Amino acid sequence: MSDTLAPRAIIGVMTPAMNTVVQPELERLRPSGISNQMQRFRLGGERISDDLFGEAEKLMDANPLALAIGLTTDAGPGGVEKLKSVCDELQDRIGIPVCNASIATQKGLHALRAKRIAVLTPFNADIDQVVKANIEAGGFEVAAIKGTEAPSLPQICETPLDQIRDLARQLAATDCDAIAQIGTALPMVGLIEELERETGKTIVACNAAVYWQTLRALGINDSVPGFGRLLDEA
Image (tube, rainbow, N blue to C red; front, side, top):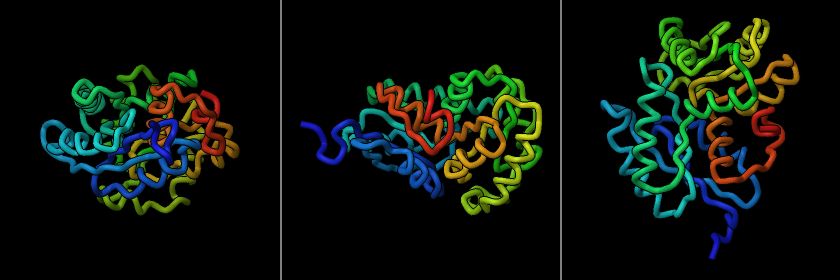
């Protein structure tokens, strides 16, 4: 028998313990007949998180059909590949698809045939150079990159929406095919459609991307209108 409130699918959502943005943003993207079930983990250690696997195994008690890992690691050298390796190992262990926000963002950009990218981050100029290198390693050209310069990870969640709008507009004015937003604690999902309409540029926000990839991994191809081209068209 199927879950009464989620007859189509249960999706497991995991994010760092301090991140208060992933849960409400992914809830906004949920199609009818699907529920999101949440579990948190702490960052740290050589493998990104020392308790990710244990927390994922607890979440398996809810019988999810896939996991969406609300985390980007573009801010660390080689971080995208490290996160992919960890998620691939976790997928092998639990036997269901495991998607992460770094890889999903790149897949979303490829799906929309964007090659020349402007990047929005919550970081400072030094860290943005590491992000730029990780994006370029994914096969893209970075036309511009700007960060909100949040002073700490928890304070990323407190970023004013008008600051995000302003940076997105500046990036949209560059010669780019699309804007990629990195950092799952940066609240961007609710601004995507507004900014795409205003600027004419496609926006791939990392939280929207990881949910899009997770849905598609389950064969759920619903259009989710109101949150940009990626979820509406791809």
